[in-house]
Image (cartoon, rainbow, N blue to C red):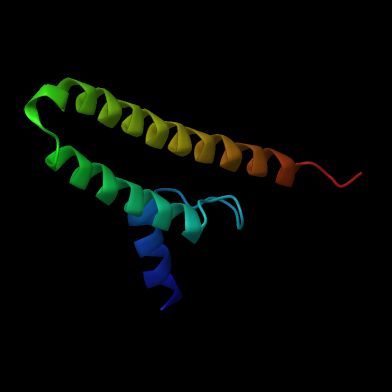
Length: 87
């Protein structure tokens, strides 16, 4: 059962990294809610506001990309710190 849980985590989040270095459940839930809100907001846009909506969606995607980048940097830092002997 533990192997199946690791496989699912690997599929959903990529390399889970060391314990405590990945995305928390709260971040994943907030990203899912934000994605749903962005999709509903984009579908309800009127024609004159479509350009502004596309800019908003691109900003939303940029924020999501930054969250993923920060996760990767956090995991790299965790790995680096775990190799160092304690002071």
